[in-house]
Length: 455
Image (cartoon, rainbow, N blue to C red; front, side, top):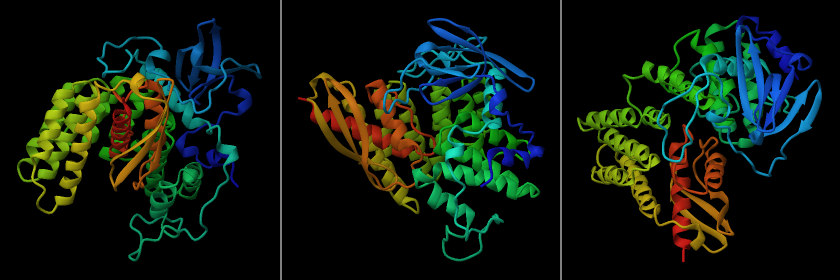
């Protein structure tokens, strides 16, 4: 089995310098699982300041002590806050702050964020890409030996065969099985070494690594690292350009996200609407959604339906529920006809479920829900999705997806329930990119379960 150090040593052209554990300096382990390495320069009862240096970039970052799990200084590790089982509390940009400030508006339910500088974000990206994930040594390199590792861009004609074709293996075996996500990432790192002398395939592997770190592990820094590497070789696809911008937003820099959105401003998609909305630019989000509607009205009614859904979801996230309901109604007014009839019919189901959920938002009162577990379903991509919502002492104790048919759900089955529990609400919940419909269905089913349980 090849080690991370061996993988890096075979790729000098990528300028990835592995930093040995012994020289990485101090380390912070955050409660959300993130590890940050550098030099601790100040520690108070409220916060820890750390200097992070990668190459020519240097950044001073400050972390609230309440977000820190453990500190390692000079080889001595000290636990600050014990982890609670199932805890996945994210570190908001405002709570990992550097120089500069942001005056951006935030969606309903979002705390005011203080942006990280470009240098700070670049330092996080370089650090993530230059060091192995903490799980690396515990996951063996494991893949079917029947795979054609040459990975032709177009697999040979014939039936779908994920035991032979790498792209199909990634789609059907890795993506659809969370137990394979980490080993899948390790496999892609192995392909880097296999194709180090094949520029075109190497670029494709880099993009695939970005996809895996983003979609499966929500490791924003490493996803950005590999997309940046690929982008230096050839332009990214529209979808990956948007997702690279989302990485920058999650890492704390709105300006870098806007730069990527401006690269694809001539394109129309729900993903663009979603990201403009999430970074607080609702007006721009609605402009894109309206352009989708206008183009759809010229003959592609399915695109008009998507535009209204995207607008409704953006408005819903910002707490403008009546306007959202208006757009859901416009979806239902589009006839389900033509070659895309099935897509429009699914849009109708989504609009109905979402409208029903929004209508009960203001009436939901957890204090009126008796302790117990309540179930409900909603329309996802491939079929209905069922959730079980557990209430204890007037609080949402757990949300679990108990039945689903979607296969490319990525992190939505765990990330969305975790956010609902964290916020103790179904309002202002972020959808997982590339699993927007699944995420939406989880929120809708949760709202339906709570509404049905109120007394």
